[in-house]
Each structure stands twice: as structure tokens, then as C-alpha cells.
Length: 259
Ligand code: G3P
Ligand code: CA
Image 1 (cartoon, rainbow, N blue to C red):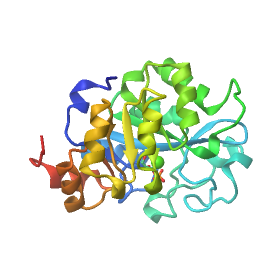
Image 2: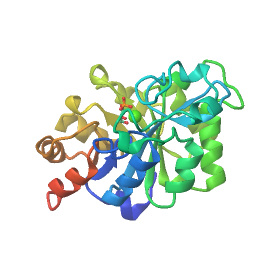
Image 3: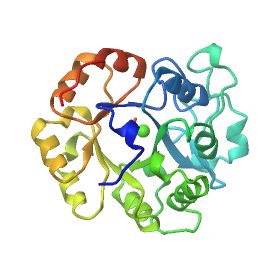
């Protein structure tokens, strides 16, 4: 089994701050990631896609509309245009001036302080492989920062993971699946060496967790924001959870360990 940093991953459950400390800070911003680190989360999760000029930006949606004061498709906008936008005020005026971070910025700032789950968005997938495709750029960044053992690369799109594995078979990979796709994990686990299965929490059963564990794959369901729901999942022996409120989960699950 591949290893992320041992002392962190031995936490059970691993508390993964979904888009940072999303419940109290504007998602996928530096303030959200810093808050998650301060709260004691074990890992931060972020979303990455490409701009028109093929730079990696950390943002969840395919457009700028919801989480910035700009408008339009990210893949039709250059980084310089995105960087002048306000990515904080939509959440709360207190966060005015918050920027859409580049992936380089987040890894440079947080990479030595916390594990990072980089979710490569399906919107960045290109049927043809390019030297500056998102998979190549993510792997190059991880190599240049020498932080491979601190990064989990995930995607809903298996082709993205296949490409990342081809570029560096040592990286830890997580397959995301939505509600309808519970059994697809076992199909892909035969084709790719996965570190984790990151399913929508509703589809997790103890049987699926056990079957996944037998393949040496960890289970990290998303997105869990109630302590009671988290406890049910921990009883099903999941290895970690994605949450918008890492402080609540750390407090609520303290001392609650299934195994
Ligand atoms: O990685 C877990 C979760 O982030 C996947 O869904 O839509 O929040 O990116 P989404
Ligand atoms: Ca995500």
C-alpha cells in the first residue's frame, strides 16, 4: 500500500477539510486553508482546473459566477483576469480581497504543513494528451516541490488518474464516485493502483468498506457535516471523512474510534 505521511494517516478517522474550512470561510481560498490548518485538520481538499492560458487555479465551479465577483467560464478566462477578482465578498464582506489561488501558491504555502488532496476537475480533462495538460502540470509541481508523500491526487474521471499514474506510479490516487457508481470502484481497482476510494457518503455500506479494504484501498466518504452521521460512518470502518467543518468533526469524534 502506498504511504502518505505515516504519522498523519494513522489518524483514524482522517479529517479532511473540504475546500478548506468551508463552513466558516470562503471555499478554496488561502484563508479557508489556513483556518483548516489552525483547526487541526489532517488534510485539506481543493479543486483545480485550467484557465484559458493553461494555468492551474483552485476553484470548484466551471464558472467564476458563484464564488467570485466575476462572470464567465474559467477555461475562457486568463489567469491575470481571474487574479483581480474578489473571491471572498460573496461569502462575507469580511473576506473582501481574497483571491482565487493558484495551485502553486497553495502547495508552496501549505505543502509542508498539512496533507493536501488535489482534486483534478473533470472540466480540465482533454481527450488529447498535451505536454501542458493538467495532469502533467500537477505532477511537475509535485516533483518540483518534492512533496509526493504529502499529496493525494483524486478525480471523478478515471482517465485523469490513469494519466497521473503513467507520469508517476508512486503518487497516491483517489477515485471519487457519485451515488450511482458504488460498484465502479472494484472495476477500476483492477486497472489502477488506488490509495483511496472517495465515495458520496450515502452509498457507503460496511460491506463495501470491507471489500475495499481487502483490496488495500482506504475509504474517505464526502461530505459529512453532522457528527452523528460521521459516527455511523466510522462504525462502518471508513478511514476518514471530508467535512466542511473540521473543528466540529475533530471535537465530535475525539475519543470515538471504531478500531
Ligand atoms: O473530494 C470530495 C468532494 O470534494 C467531491 O465533490 O463537488 O465537492 O468537488 P465536490
Ligand atoms: Ca472537490
